[in-house]
Length: 334
Image (tube, rainbow, N blue to C red):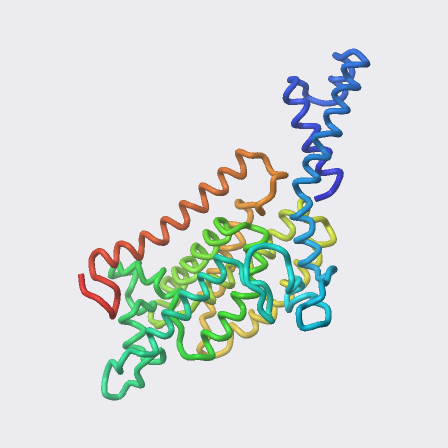
């Protein structure tokens, strides 16, 4: 949040109350004492906006790793792997890799629970290994499969986001979710973060189904790439809120991460199209959904929240439809 941006917001707010278009018109139409009163009111509103935005500015500083606090075990808590403080304020659980916020923690817990359920599944055929690396098990539990779109199995766009193929797959994805999810949830808030995450996961799987329809795929990486794409765009889109320095720092750090992961995406067995679809979906949503900041107009904030609820409801509807017709895949019958 810059003083100039706060001043503009305060000026617009006060002038609208008096049905004035700009300060020049105010000076022409008002008496000197009235104009002085308006300028004092603008200054007061500006101070209120700056005070409300102070926590958001602190989050941006933490994201750059410019602050540090002494940890219980001694030493100084500094920036995490993506430039954010591992001791950032707010409700959550401190971990050696960063603060786990509520929605991020819930998503990690669901992914781990589903992975345990996968691992306990018996082999789908005599020649299959069983568990999370069994293609038959993955297909039964909801992975993306050949012909899923043509046969109307749209629920797989959602369920595949919570399935993983092997221990290394879920471990790397959950570490990435802990770091990136924590950063995004702090700036977007839990509702908007969850909406972008779920929509990006579905966007990634949808692109996979369209471009590589013969693949069997699973994993949260499409949704995680969506958060990466969203934060890259949002760091510039919301620079008036977090400040130019923080905006550049976050963009530079995450840009390097994106380049690295683009290279990794071309390795055999990696879901290139899920990554691409998720990243594009997240980036597009970041142009529409702003950071959770009081500096934006109330109607805009409300619209962003409503859109997030719609995104969450739409994604969950895919799962609810499947459960209603078929039971929980691999576990129950209708």
